[in-house]
Image 1 (spheres, rainbow, N blue to C red):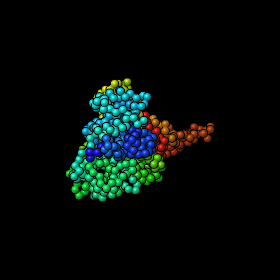
Image 2 (image 1 turned 90 degrees about the vertical axis):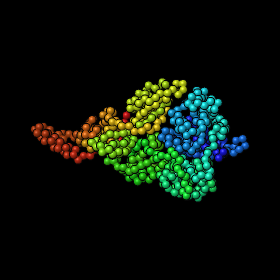
Image 3 (image 1 turned 120 degrees about the vertical axis):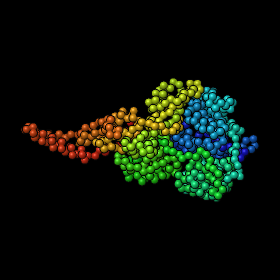
Length: 593
C-alpha cells in the first residue's frame, strides 16, 4: 500500500482538467494516443468541453528508483453531478486543485474544495494555463493562498497544453498525498464510485478497496441493495480493462458480475464478502434524488414504445435518470422524467436525439413539492396535474437551495436584483480576493430551473460562476395555475407558481396563446384560472362567413332570418367543437419570457 496513491482532480468547468489529465497519461506512458481529452470519450463531452461521466485510470510512475501506482479518479465539473464528485472524493486520499490562470477561483471549485477538505484530503494546488497571454498567475496564487492557507511555494504552475509543470505535479502526488490505509486481513469492504454499461457483459462497477482484498470468482454482496453476485472478473483500470486474479487493500479496480439492471448498482454502495461480511457499510451512501422533473413526449404518438426502449438504454449508462409513464390530453402518451438538474436534462434530450433519433417535446421543467393535506397526509407532487384539490390542501412546501455566485464587484447590483426578483434572500457576501465577490443566496429551486442561469450569464457578461446545493424544504404560498380553452383545462400547460407572480404569468400565457392558436368558426375563450377564480382572459375571434351576401334588396327580416340561422349553427358548433393546441404553440409557450 505504501506505493499506491489515489487522487482526484477538482476544477471548475473549462479550467483545463481533462487536458491536464491527458498530459499526465502521456508523461507516465500510460497511453501513446496523442488526441485531446482522452478520458472524455462521448461526442457531447468533446463538443461542449465538459466532463459528463467521471472516469478512472491507473498510471505507473517511477520516482527515485521505486515504482508507484497512481490512480486518477476523474470527476465531472458541473453542479448537477455533485453526488458523483462526492463519491470520487471519498475514494481518494488527495486532490489536485486546478485553477485557470486566466479566470481565477470559481464557485464550483470552492464547493468541491470544501467537500474535499471535509473528507480530510491532501490538497495539491495547481495554476493551469500559465502559457496563455491573458494569464495572471500572481493574482490567482493570491486567491489560492487566501482560500486554503497554503504557502506560495506549494503552488505548482502548469500548462495542460504545453506540458509545463507535469513532472512537478506527479512528484507532488507521490510526496504530498498520503498512501491509502486499511486492514489487509479484515473482511472485504469496497466503495463503488462509478459504474458503466457494456452491452455484452452487463454493468461494470468501479470500486476502491478500503479494507480486505478480493479474488476472482469470490461470492460478493452489495450492501445497499442486499443482492449477491459472483465476481466473474476483477482487474485494474488502464486504457482498457486489465484483469487480475486478486486486488488488495487500497487498490482501485472494476468488477464484472453479469448484472443487467442499472438500478442494482448504485454509486456510493459498499461491496463485501457474502460469507464473511464487514460489520457496516461505508458511510455517505444515499439514493440519487432527481431535482427537476419534466414530461417527455414523442412528436409522433406511434414512437411511444421506441421512446420507452431509448430511455431504458439511456438509463443503463446513466443511473440517475428516472422515468415513469404518464399521459396528457394535449400531448398523448409520454414519460415523466426526473433529472439531477437543467444541464442533465439538456444532455438527456441531446442524447435521445443523437443516439436514438427520437424527436421529442419536453414540457416546462418543474421541481418536486411536498403537499400536506388537511388530514395531515404528506404527498410528493412532481407534476401540477396530480395536485390535490385546493379545498383539501393545508399547505405546500417547496425545495430551497443555497446558491453561491462568484463575480467581479461591478456586477453585484444587477445580480442582486436578479436574485431578489427570483425570491432570493441574501445570506452573505465575502470578498474572495481583489475585486472578486462571493454572494450567498437562499432561493427556491423552482425559480432557477427555467432561465436563471442564462440571465445570470448575460447580465454579468459571462463573468459570474454559479453553484448550488439543496438546503431543505420551506413552506410557501404556491398556487396551481390552469389554462382553460373554452372552459376545458389543458393539463400540459398547468404550472405551480408562487401566488405573487401567478396573475402576471397567467396574463402573459393567455396573450401568447392568442397569437398562436389558429382561428376557428367560433370564438375561443383562453382563460387562466387559479382554482375556480379566472385571473386573465383573451378571446380568439371567430372566422365569419358573410351569409347575407346573396340577399340584395327586399325586407330586412330576410337578412335577420339568415343571421339567426347562422347564430344557432355557431352555438351548436361551439358546444361540440374541440380546440387542439398545435405543437408550435406548445413549444413557444414553454419558451415564454
